[in-house]
Length: 168
Ligand SMILES: Cc1cc2nc3c(=O)[nH]c(=O)nc-3n(C[C@H](O)[C@H](O)[C@H](O)COP(=O)(O)O)c2cc1C
Image (tube, rainbow, N blue to C red; front, side, top):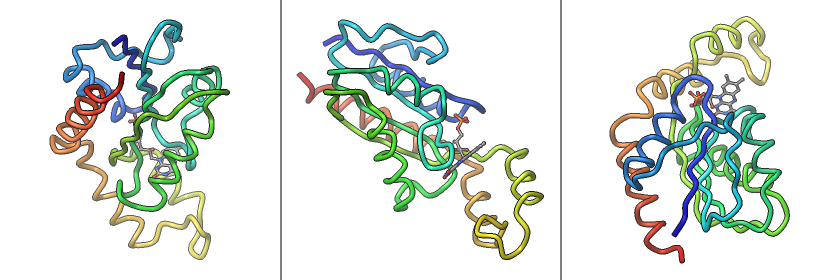
């Protein structure tokens, strides 16, 4: 089976996950900036960092240009991986795919939120604003700071190894 593994990463979290998957499948993780040609692959594994609830702009563009292909998605995000928000972020990524694509798998894990982003949120959103920096939000961000960790990377390796055994 011919598999293409591509990813988009701004601060390195999604790149780490992509490289772990690449290690497990013995594939090179190709940055989406290289605009890998998807023609002739049986499966495309595409990873993104979550930007405002969906795929970041570069992967958004790439996913929307895929047609008639089997695609497995993975992503990293600041929120908890088992949250409703995380599930929606994968569903929103899947919705970006071009005509006739089939979603063959989904994987998501937490990723450290960049310091600048946290500072910007603190400045931009005053108390009472829906995005204001509440103690709960700060606790989530602190929890995300150690991710993706070894357990996340092991889970990604395992998930995609199993998936690729099952995909014809
Ligand atoms: C502009 C911006 C928007 C973000 N939007 C979300 C979001 O909607 N939900 C979320 O859980 N995390 C959000 N994050 C956190 C990132 O998705 C997370 O830190 C991710 O792991 C970054 O991946 P990377 O290191 O591969 O760039 C956002 C981060 C930035 C910088």
